Image 1: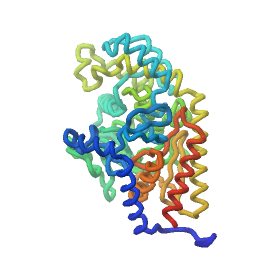
Image 2 (image 1 turned 120 degrees about the vertical axis):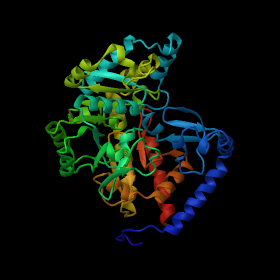
Image 3 (image 1 turned 90 degrees about the horizontal axis):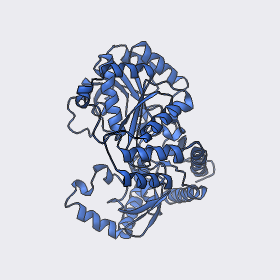
Image 4 (image 1 turned 180 degrees about the vertical axis):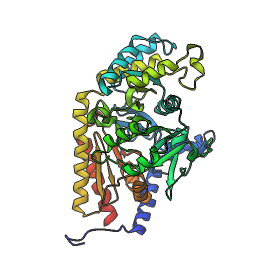
Amino acid sequence: MTDSQTITTIDRARLKQLIISETELFAKEHPQSKELFERAKKHFVSGVPMNWMVKWAGSFPVFVKEAKGAHFSDVDGKNYLDLCLGDTGAMTGHSPDASMEAVIAQAKRGLTYMLPTEDHVWVAEELSRRFGLPYWQMAMTATDANRFSIRLARKLTGRSKILVFNWCYHGTVDETFCTLNDGVEGPRRGNLGPPVDPATTTRVVEFNDLPALERALAHGDVACVLAEPAMTNIGIILPDPGYHQALRDLTRKYGALLIIDETHTICTGPGGYTRAYGLQPDILTIGKPIASGVPAAVYGFSEEVAEKVRILTNTEEADTGGIGGTLAGNALSVAAMRATLEKVLTESSFKHTIPLAERFAAGVEGVIKQHKLPWIVKQLGCRAEYWFHPTPPKNGGEAAFAADGELDRYMHLFALNRGILLTPFHNMALFSPAHTAEDVDLHTKVFAESVECLLN
């Protein structure tokens, strides 16, 4: 290869052979994980307690022994740099001291009462300060927060449909597993047993396509738009300049509520993308990292929405509205949430983690440039990823088309065999307060080695 030559294709035969050899190496070096996996297959469907846990690059998952901060160890005695962090659930780093101290202290006082504590009030005040929405409710997961928000939106507007963006992800909410197939809404592939065809409940448009958004809203039957402020689950897709103001204007024009899901985009800063860019949602949802990995989620309301919800609330029927849950807002989760917001996911922590993502992006870009590869890197706050594509996708459809499963698997497996765990669903790295510049540089070194091995 000459200095001026740009690589436009990958030798797929070599790539397949590398995947075989890396898979064999993985199996050889993880005998205890393999043994546990074989045992687990006798009692768990697919050998795992939750089916997503099979979606790793090896032929079976690594079984974890313990984790702390930015690292974990497995049952085979191997140590790993964790850039997945439980797919954002451990964005705080594993078991941060402040949160664990709060969990232990609360556990001694009781786990759940179905009654509030002072921590609940503190957390609501802090959420209001961070995100700008005055009223809040609690749930166990972001899926529940989104589901409850959709139900409220339908009740408040009297409309039946929701609107989402193509290839979005908002947890396991039935209405959101809907994609565009040749421009027509239909079930996302792999969607198991939806209660109804999601095309009957959902309108789908591409992110960043304002004309399509207005056409969909103009039907007058959309109760709410549910959106990540920047798409993350199909890869990082940033909004075009002015997109969010137009989205807000159009939802108001056509009478639809705007729900912003910050579960992943909290990586932008302590108040998420909403605070960083001055968004004005009617409802905001967030889960995963806000209690340092203890299951917890919240959803907040504007003053106007809260007043309408208050009018609808009937004490006698509060437990039959399809919103809530016995363990929602339990004392243990809320104690962890308070400690996380007060002492872990702070302004100073983001001043540490965002530069690490910038360092990651620069390191990967340096390798890409050195080898003249038609690949790119995207970043959002303390989250960064690389794409095997020459230009940034503008929407979910483009992102799904650009996916390269073979290259993904090779890169993930090469990194895993050298002690680095990436997010399994794409080539994404997330940084916690426990990560260091040395951690980033280790990834850059391993990434460079994987590319050298692929090309030579």
